[in-house]
Image 1 (cartoon, rainbow, N blue to C red):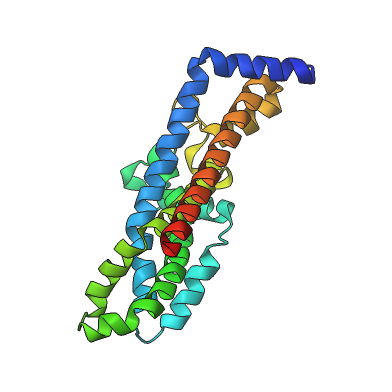
Image 2: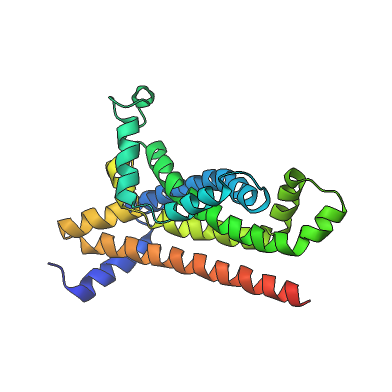
Length: 235
């Protein structure tokens, strides 16, 4: 077992030197998580806005389902995606298992309900404010969705950042469908788990520090956007 202080020193040396393995793992983590959040945004933003504005039978039940899916257990999502992409599964012919694409699919499934539920809440609040004005202008629900999404873009960016925070910290689902293969599907969270089990605390700590910095950066960005939105509302 390495000395605690020595492990921290080696970790910061790895970061400062731009260790090739470290950089590769961080870049893959960012590529997988950012792509998953973009996909989740393409699905979750219009879905959330539709649930906020449109009125149709079963809307209440659908809102309950979307909210409930925010707490999806990652290992269950990983298992379902694994079954779908395995050779015996319906999408096995695509040969996506143990690839970054499989990890993106798993993360997108986890993040989409978060983006959709937060979007519904934001657009619902905004719709209460704009409803009378939109009705007086004869704007239909389809055009209203586009208008409200644009006006709420600052708040919706916060929803996407919240989804990114969930995706970048995910380990259960991505290790099941990605396999934690070196130079192929190894991301920060799975590498931290592996290196810790091997006693390679320096690399695990270096990745942990970078992951914490990313999490702090995301939270700082969310706070900045929220402050800017409040300032704009007061102006």
